[in-house]
Length: 338
Picture 1 (cartoon, helix red, strand yellow):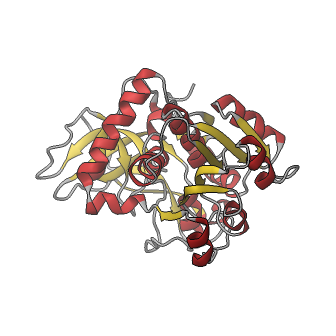
Picture 2: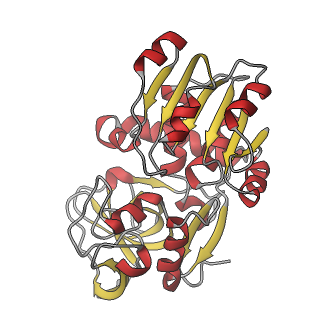
């Protein structure tokens, strides 16, 4: 397979909002090192950490310039020494290796972050199957051990992380409550299958959860927002409930009142899914197999609300940054878009 000598890519050349930080450049196609693959990007899903990296406030701070876009579906075009998990021509998904991220024509991947893409999903959906669904599966199943019939409360339920949690909760047999901001997002959460959708702009979710559960509260709360949202969640968590701390998209990192957790008998669980890639990669592989099974059966299906080509990356990423998107927004290369 012939590989061009140069590629187009969106580089972060100075930190700031995506529309200001990203610059379209032409640079050399990377060479694969030990255990690495060069891939032709078919689709790259936008994630909030991409926004945070553009701003320079994410825990991972690549040196400038770098190309964001961690989550891709791609075709393997070259492999370095020692690669055993994929071959040239394979359609794969997983994490890119910075600074050669996915908002480009070609990217670099380490083989331990590479998984075969399921044929049941198109390129944009396959690119969206990894971070959000892996985080949701580990949080709900491995850590919270959610059970059929339990009530799951999902915050930011219309976002990429939240929408994955809704689908995984329903697949696990739970009753799912989705909390969103605005009617458009509420309608989307209903389509995903949430049993109750609460618009936080109009209703107090604490009271609504208590009414829905007959005063018991939610057994599992999935919180990618943090701050005040977390504090209010502690007021509607059930006996032996589990609050999963996924992130702090609201901008405020809360302090937990451990005396409250003690007297109310609930657990606070942090999920940093990225650690599993180094601490327990076999568990990531097993999770991927389960997610493929669920996708093939139709139990989960990443909802891609926006598809745009390479030229649309800054605007698409900015819409995500501004909270104006639902589901997943994904870059697809010309010829792959629908």
